[in-house]
Image (cartoon, rainbow, N blue to C red):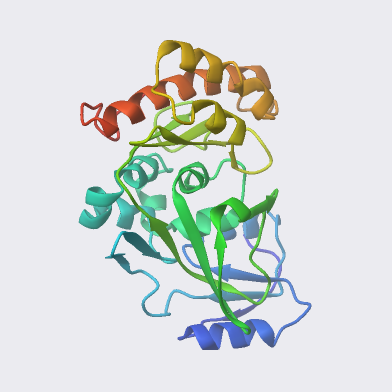
Length: 294
């Protein structure tokens, strides 16, 4: 049950949405897209907004398309949309590997990828993958449009670069030939939050991107691990070197779902298996995307 009353508005255009946000300065406002996180937070009294702005009626926010070498994903794109998209399957199957691990089919039908990164919870599935890819978040507000690179998006626990008078319109991912892997540790297969997660992208010139989820206040990239890998073909010695760096790169907690020590150990296991899978996928020798690696 949602105990606290709030105002609800459902704009039909982006301009109307931003005008509503500007007209309510100083108020606690929440954007409603899929609503899977927001509704749960409202029921638990984790948030108490004065105003909820429902953007589901705004056209063109569910668009999936390629623009040259750039993948465009509207902010209302759900995880199911990603899974079922031929465009995503052809150009960015790593997104499907990630999306297929999210909660249940019912949640995937409603939850949006952009909403996932706007929640900015440590365990958000999209975070490590979008950090590993060359992702930009595009916003609309009273000052016009602006863009934020994913490296600058997560600013703290449940905090992002999004301001109170802005709406995310879409994300873009600049694509080139790559192999990737998303490895997620769960208590059971499916319908669970990540206990820990690793997102990896490898390019043909031995350029690596490595990001972790659920082991710090926000999803994080590891510049030190990337630098250690840079320009080098993957072998057992290199894997051992970067696996040994993991404890200094993450800051997991102990909670009801896992201990910090277990999360650290499994991040080392997942980094090793993810790197191996990403390199093999780049070479076209498998394992297939969506193959469980742990």
